[in-house]
Image 1: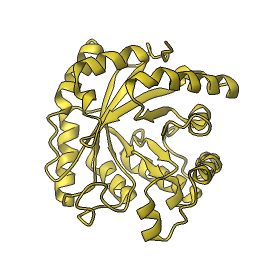
Image 2: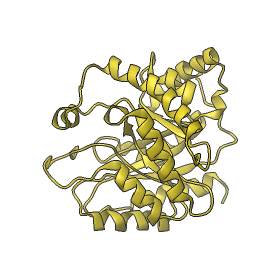
Image 3: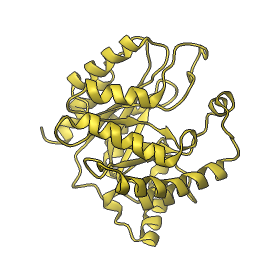
Length: 275
């Protein structure tokens, strides 16, 4: 069974606060509560409409929210889970990420995680006037644009405060995992636990082909109230850790943003990290 080299990595617990079905004051409160609770990272998502019923309810745009998170928080890393590459010119994406990185630095080092993917929500594309095209074409665009984003970071003045970590979400074996091997500091996947070893085989093969040390990549997964509840169970966590998964990110919906499911994850994190 393939495992991922991760003995040098601590367990981290993030939370995705779905930017839907809530006022921004409720979202702001959830952001502050999550940081106070002790999470390592806070994520939103990059969509234009709610993903669950009611589909015409309150919703907020990702990157303006990220600038707010940068100002509101002091310690946590944060980012989109994930940015839709199709919605913005890649050089603009780089500049936005660099700016939010500086907003979050507050005299030190920035905390933005540049989570990105090829996009999938057809309604977003159609309603906002973007060409939906095909999965393959969107992945090809992501391939081309990641190079432009990284080059633009090298040209910006001032430069980012750090080498902004790139998180890539997805599990496709021919294109997505190759992009992870080439560019990502973090791979986020919703792959079922029993299939993760195979995906790791594929990722490690791509790392070998592109000359990347797989231990440089952090493996992340998560669950949502929309179908990934079993990761709340202790057995699932204990199965993930030996595989090399070190970053767990539950998704919490508004309007109440009940963070109680995160507390046992933080306790497990601290036990595994020897705190």
